[in-house]
Image 1 (cartoon, rainbow, N blue to C red):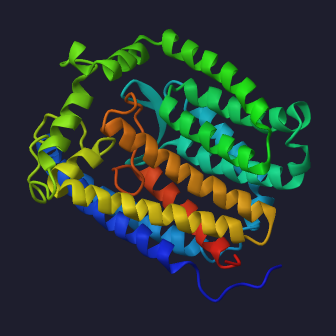
Image 2: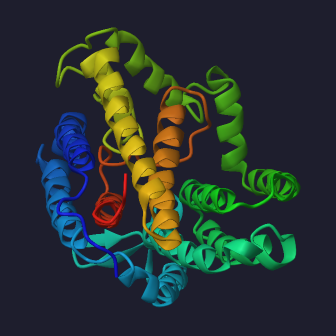
Length: 366
């Protein structure tokens, strides 16, 4: 269909692999104490993360060679499969409950999180819809509402688990895609007001979410309860200073910071590698964002452009929310840091998505 470039975007590949390498090192450093205590194996989480990384890197390089418009043809099928998985996970006895959320399906010794699959499936479907109906997007009734309908239905299923963090990333990513497609700002303001009212209702309906908001405003009001995580996170970041305490020398990972290998791994990284280590990681993410925007602007068709915007938007939003939570700018949401946090579904799906982005780069003119 299009003349393929000889090589993909190598800067995107290098930054991805560097972040993945840092993530593997930090998962071991952050989890060794917990893993030894719980599973009598300090490498328990590191070995599983290495397996997920291997599968994800293989998927990335394989998908990099699959023409991206193939996903346009299969977008409906992928979305239907993901909706079926979201329904299955809600069935007692089928979905696995962890941390109060029924968000996982067991597959042998491992588990998958269907909401992670839904994020990329929704991005692919919405990219197809926007590429075919871009002229209608300025209309509230004919463009904006139809494009958001499936997104909100998927969000409702995710909230039944409940998993506000993943749902928020998906919705925000789709809003970015729709805005780039040319939706009117006035329509966004109107729907945004309705969305804020709905978000307030979701927060009020769940006492644990109210506790997260109050702990965000004043974590010291409940230092051993809802404010515990953010206080321990700040205790980790503070002593890191410019150069950090040294790799492996974190103090907060010694049973102070809960599950330090997942949502709060950036706090452990800054504690051990300091401000400079944190800036280096953020710089790698900025390079990925820059390359993703360049690929999207140079894509040969609208589908490729919207798909690239969706993928890099999902990455940027997830990074922003995670780091904002870690440094106390946002309430705790339970969102992992891409490529660094422990988690099979999140890591493999993010690498899969980067594979699609790399394939688009082989056709982009920039």
